[in-house]
Length: 182
Length: 145
Image (cartoon, rainbow over all chains, first blue to last red; front, side, top):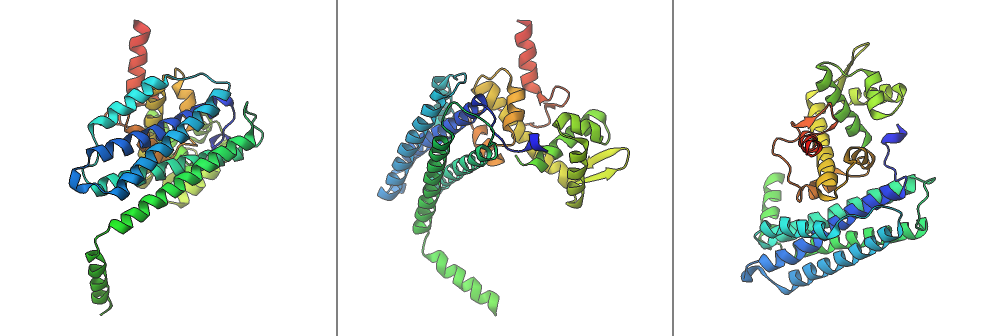
C-alpha cells in the first residue's frame, strides 16, 4: 500500500504542496482583514481587532516564508497574482455577519492550516529517501515553526471565544446539571 | 485523505463503471498496489461494515461505505478543480493522485471556497476519464479550438 501513503517525493510535489499552503495563508489573511472591516460598529472591540490584525500579519509572514522556500526549489512557478486576485474576489462577497461568526471562521481557518502543516511534516518525515533542492532540516524546521504558530493561533481564538461567552450560560448549565442529577 | 477513504472511493467508482462488484485485480491496477494489499484492506473495510465482499466477484460498498466514498470523491474533485482552475496545472489528474494522500478533507473544504464547483458534485465525476466531468468537457472544448 506504499503508493497510497502520504509522501512527498520530489521538488515539484513539495512546491505544489507549499503553493497550497500559500493559498491557505492568503485565505486567512484576506478573511481576517475583511471580516473585521465588515463588522458593525457595535460588534467591534479592541481584543478582536488585535487578534484579527495579528492573524492577518502572521499569515502574510508565513506566506512569505513559504514563497522563499518555493523560490529555492526546482519547480514551475504559478500565477500568484491571479491567485491573489481570485482569493480576494471570492472573499469580498461573502462572510460571517456577526462577532461569533467571525471568530468561528478564524478558528476554522487556523485549525485547517494547522492540519495542513501537520500532515505535510508527517509526509516529508515519512519520505526519508526523497531528496530536495532545499535543506531537509531547514525545511522541516520552517514548517514545524509555522505549524506551532498555527496551534498558538487556534488557542488564542479559542481563549477569546471563551472570554466573550455570556456569563448567563454558566448558570444555565449548572441548572440543567442539577436537574439531570435529581 | 487516508488510505481507507482512497480505497472506498476507488471501489465505488469501479462499481459504477462495471455496474457490479469491483474486482480485486481492477482495484489493484487503479490504485497501483498489489492484489494482496487490496485483499487485506477489503478485509479491514468489511470488518468496519463499509464494504461487502463476495469471493470471485469482488467488493461492493455498503450504504455507510458509499457515504464515505462520495465524501472522498468530493474532496478529490475539489483537488482536481483547484489544481486545474486555480493553479493552472495541465496534468491535474496525475498531480491530484499524488497529492491526495497528503490533503485532508478539511483543507479541501477551505480550498473549495475559491473554486466554482457545481452543486451536483460528485455526481458529475467521469469515472471512465477519472476526472471531474466538467474538466473533461473543458479539455474537449480546448482541444477543438
